[in-house]
Length: 360
Image (cartoon, rainbow, N blue to C red):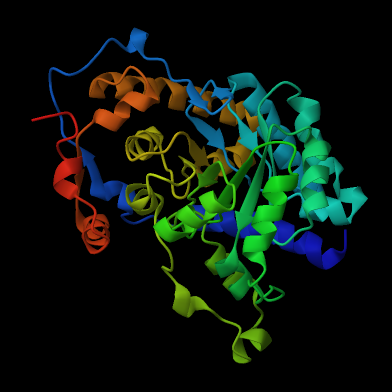
């Protein structure tokens, strides 16, 4: 791999970690509340956390979302993440495989996932704009069960070496979905998928979409931080776009009934956020930054007990809410407040109906 591309891969992880070290303010997850019904709880022993998405059956309703891969450092990250996924049964995705498709020497940074997790559910990942044949190669490299296809127009806009031509993206999505030997999950990288976008993705053949909303790892900030002072003086700094996009919850609540099956990620901090996303319409929930910190600090040895706590706590919260399965959360009563409520009102979403889903 050329030095510039390798540095970018490592920079993304380093800068994402630095973001996680900063104090975190209020997010849209804090604006979603459950109406507490004190007699609605069930026996936690009867809660079944597994989810079914089409033909897939996942033991956990959350998964490790795509992070990285391709360099010596990120290969170690993928190895430890794969071990943690293997030990807990949690599905996982890798970061963009594109670098390995262009440079065979980088392939080991992704193949290590299958070496450590031969029987787990693994998602490969490529960016829109790649050739349809690349979808097949990415799946073959990881013997993947699914392919994430990421849309990252905001990141490309801020990236010093990014593309500014998005005109062929719809055709690329259609071709990659048609060529992929496994189902494709079209995902954003942290800026959300709107109602209109989700409808269009369904028309292009997408069965699944990860809304990947704002509030988690901010790739706009990451790319701004990668600009040197010379590029900033030439107009390269896009900090003016800070806050651009929609949160995962905003996307879920605004999603059309005729869109793809939804997954959600972006700013998931804890099991309660997982439960909120499931209640808002996600079939499963992706986690990246909240798993990256312990992974970097202590590898799989630190991450496995954290995932096990998330499983136990998610189970307990479902029992508290009277939901024996993640799907049953669709009948819980949701109170939407603050900035998220303002978004919903502007988009014509019936907040009163959300607050009374369990009945009068």
